[in-house]
Amino acid sequence: MGNETEEAERAKQGTGRVISSSGIALRRGRIELLGSGSKELQDSDSLAEEPRRDKGGQNWITRDKDKFKFPGGGTQFIHGAKQYLNQISEMVPNIAFGSHTRVVLDVGCGVASFGAYLFSKNAITMSIAPKDVHENQIQFALERGVPAMAAVFATRRLLYPSQAFDLIHCSRCRINWTRDEWEFLNSLGSATLISFLKCDEDGILLLEVNRMLRAGGYFAWAAQPVYKHEEAQQEAWKEMEDLTTHICWELVKKEGYIAIWRKPLNNTCYIIRDAAVKPPLCNPDDDPDSVWYANLKACITRLPENGFGSNVPTWPARLHVPPQRLENVLMDANIAKNELFKAETAFWDEVVGSYVNAFHWKKMNLRNVMDMRAGFGGFAAAMIDNQLDSWVMNVVPTSGPNTLPLIYDRGLIGVAHDWCEPFDTYPRTYDLLHAFGLFSTEQKRCNITSILLEMDRILRPGGRVYIRDSKYIVDEIQTITVAMGWRSDQHDTSEGPYASRRILICQK
Image 1 (cartoon, one colour):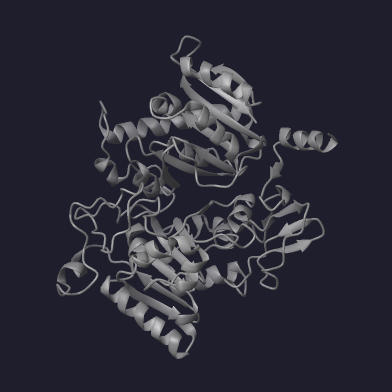
Image 2: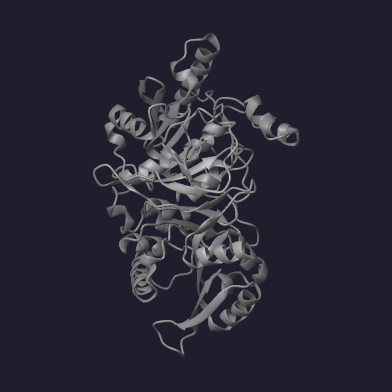
């Protein structure tokens, strides 16, 4: 009983972090300022049980008394993540982290040291694991306060739009980009082997990377075929060279164990290729932004002829400039879409500003935040404008307009999801869940109780929930939250007590 009381008290203070099916209990540590003002997530977490040692000697995590520390080493970065990032910047200065390159995908991320150190360069990284067997590393990444998901390269598209990432990175990610890798397949179990073998078509996994990579964006690959001279490794390098040439990537620089390619800015190279060259271009009617249960395709995603997505402004200007791809969003709007975008931005700036002042958000130690119905990403943009030390996972429900490409064009991250299904993350990983109009929109499709139970699963002890919705549905939601053991209170919006919407604030 005493332990339960202590855990409840920690949760009340917003510091409770209990994770892992392996029984490792952690308490969130500080994000320390290291060096000359750089904010690097070399944070430390209290531990109740030492992890197993099947990654021993790789320096991806160390124990210092009662703390876990992440020095940014491991097999990926033998000289540390900071030096590794500096090497990439020196190899290709035009990458320009934090300016030209704002949104990054790290494949096979380990404990996400690559993404953690990129925060200090004003870039945000979606860290994904094609397999997550070493100490639940994605869970460690989320404990560090770094965006991360388990996302297997399999037979379906990943849940990110086309031209989402300015740079995609793979360091020892154990994916053979030119053909299926038996080691990778067998690790997923024999039940999936047959379906994976069907994917062995002209480097289909690298074609999926090509779909997600922004026009003019970079692919950085650090792997043995880049630098080893054994026959098998040189054969693998030759296959990679051939495939990247066929999809019109330019090898910008090869140095040490890193090779960096650049994707073309338009379709010219594809069009002038010999017609017999594989892989072919995708059909013109293929929608590259359709990702929910969409199968991978062994073809090259066409770039828009109008250049949309390829000429986004540099960061931070892109955060507030209406994206060109806004014109492609199918939605009912009574005013011009650009005006709607600006109105949403102003609305959330005001709302989040009021939350910061009235509910003291800067004192809550909010780090991992999810906007469950993100729209144009205005809530996440307002979090940045209000200088909250957090990141936002912008979720775009599949039942509504697909605004996910706009979110990435703004320099934010997000994912497509159907809230009638579970969200792909570990339990107790988010500090704050925000839902605007979600329940009134989804009540005819989904069971409201099921959505709330899923929110309870992914919310850490002491975590907060802010629900802004119709006052009639808020009453129903509050009844369920009380039954779940949450503490909840209703508040008026700025429109007053007779407005059609109410705000429900909950704490787990």
